[in-house]
Image 1: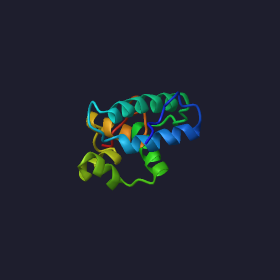
Image 2: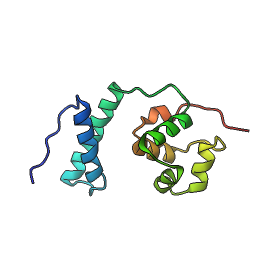
Image 3: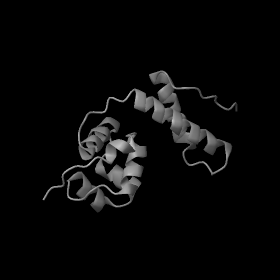
Length: 125
């Protein structure tokens, strides 16, 4: 199999191809060729997303909910990624703040820049 060559992502088609490939190599072993490819893909994908970002200006929780809808995810999908359904529920209902671990995991899962998830927002009382 020939190894894919990656260049700066300029089109939606290239972006989707990169995301598809990332899904295949995201669990690759550290220091392997696929791991290096994964690191390159993360950089290329994030640069494309930054330059083509049309994320609305809303608080981090609303942004998570919007992206969940975009991807067809439920809170149980986020819980699988994070590992605790109760905490995810509290966060989505503004009863608990996002943790750094959640920000990292949800940023990757939902393709949201971490910088958009660290903004302050009001918790319910």
